[in-house]
Length: 467
Image 1 (cartoon, rainbow, N blue to C red):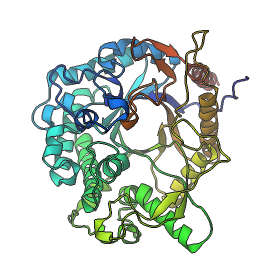
Image 2 (cartoon, helix red, strand yellow):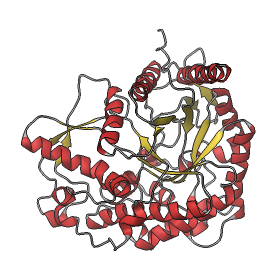
Image 3 (spheres, rainbow, N blue to C red):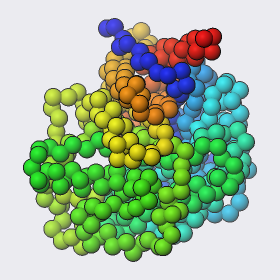
Image 4 (cartoon, rainbow, N blue to C red):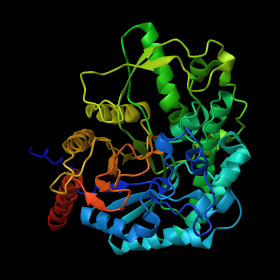
């Protein structure tokens, strides 16, 4: 089958690949690292598929040079990775752990030696378990602890790292972690989950101040925003779509980009959104200017009105906002069950800039698909569906740029197959196949296609330099 055409981007557009610490590193008890909430969660029976843990994962802690070589061969401009809080600052308090930060110091140097720009995410969900035992993100103190930890990392790596992301997908941390329990720490709560969302935002703002004080050059945050469409034009479905938009998007974007809380929050959560977790001055901290907005995007959301799971408003979790996702049988679905609709990414980008005209430049910090990958008899993974997914979504980004949207770069998710949270090792998002028994890495067809794209981008830069 002929590979899809390569999209065309401005010469300055950055192409990269992304991973996350707990999903790839392994070495969970080495060099002073203490348990995170994901260590605890994954070791609790019934929490992850097959009882899978990140104890070994892709063994990246020991194989990082091999993985950086894959990145160099891929030809990416940048690599987005996350630092593990309990590796850098065991227990979430106190001084930096020299052995822990030393790993990231070596990783950054290895990347730079290969001409790859490191982009650091400070929080990709691995909260130190000791902080969770003290209340976790429900508690305001955790935001201050996060700012302290952020300063430790930037002080160690800031002389070489240009791009800093405070939080990855706080929606997942707050709502999957504290509202429906599908992610660590596995709680099912109402107002405390909304408090967690607020304290994540507060932690972001406090960390931005620390990063700025330390001289960080580019600071932003990554949100997994939904492109929400009502299932019909009925008043009920349009109201449901607004509740879904509030739940997934506006709870983050309004404080960050508009300096206000969503007007629709009471209609979305009722008495759960009592604001008891807020303090005067929080909005000013949260809304401190950022240099870019990271967007993670995988699938669209078509939403209809639905009865609440819990009739008593006081007993609902913060996940229950009276909506349901409508099936899309006309679309192909990934193995995660997610419908594939590349133009929806373009629509989301347009909607963000329309709602927030002063929005900073956007980076697509994750985009990819889980597919039924197998290594064929020829020793290759022919992941045609993933190639088409990436090509379609990148084409949607290129179209928005052509229409004037300020989108600066794109990171494919993920460099390699890894521990996929509650799904264990059942779902494969990588453009590099990982045999978890042998740790052998095998580039897939999607890796080769992305390699062609990075080569074309370098050629475009060369032509511009000669013009």
